[in-house]
Image (cartoon, rainbow, N blue to C red; front, side, top):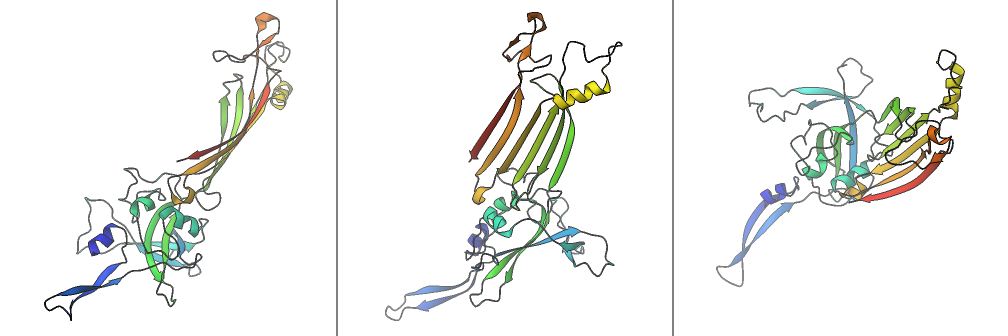
Amino acid sequence: MNNWYASQGYVMNSVTGAALVPDKEAEGQGHVELEVRETKLSKSRSNSVVIRFVEPTSDATDESVDVMDIPIQNNSPDQSQSADEAQRYQRYRITSGRTRPLKVAKLVGTAPGSHFRIIPQRWSRIVASPGGIFAGSTNNGRVGPKSAIFSTIHAVRPVPTGEDDNTVSLEIIATENKPYVSLEYGVTKSLYSDQWEGEFDLKHANAFGGGEVATLNIRKGGTSTGNGSDRTQDGHSTLGDWNKKVKDGPLSWRMSFSDNSLGGDDAGYDLELFRDHVGLVRNSETSGRTSPLRTDQRCVFDCPNTHSLGLFQLALNK
């Protein structure tokens, strides 16, 4: 039974005793009574899961900062620690975090009042780096994603709540996967207008403390008249002409929000709202007439009849 408890993730449950009780009515018969200790989480939603956020530090002189020493996990099968080798520790400072404990509880499959249970496959999905106590755990042969909530989980332990029902809180000591926010910018070439566009991309990987990803993409392009009126005699454009091109150019944007761990199951949703500019081709050989944009044709000159396209998209993933 102890082996079954361990294989099913009930690491705090165990058989503490056994006794053979004779049957008073039937001589030579009896039954076995087992004493079992089973640990349950607190029934309080706010107290069932507690997260202690830590970050590595090498400063041991600052007494105003709360620190704790955590054993260094050696997860390499070729470098197992010998019995004579001293345990090494890494110093961490206790800090604040963004991740919500209740969302983590859903992701790992725990609920207030349920039995204390750890399923490594679920925990590995919320850890990005190979370090920590779940380094050897995989989810169908895959390690956790780079955008996981935590970079490392150092310890998971039960802490008695002191209540009369002998329940515990699930304490998680972890380092969050930072930075949450990333900013990228650059220059791209549009497939619609064949014009250069400036691009700005903003991403938040933990928008509401549950691993939700929110992104914002903005693209601003320029215009080109194609008739040479915006150029000087030597064939170069003036600064004023370039400013007018950028000012009159199309503006496209795209916003998205996704949560790939809806309710702790392998389900999620993607929400996307965008506005793109699709142009019409001006053909110089047809005296300025326009024709619909074909898949094999790009807008090589100015597209005055540019259309704006705004769409709303919601996808549920399972």
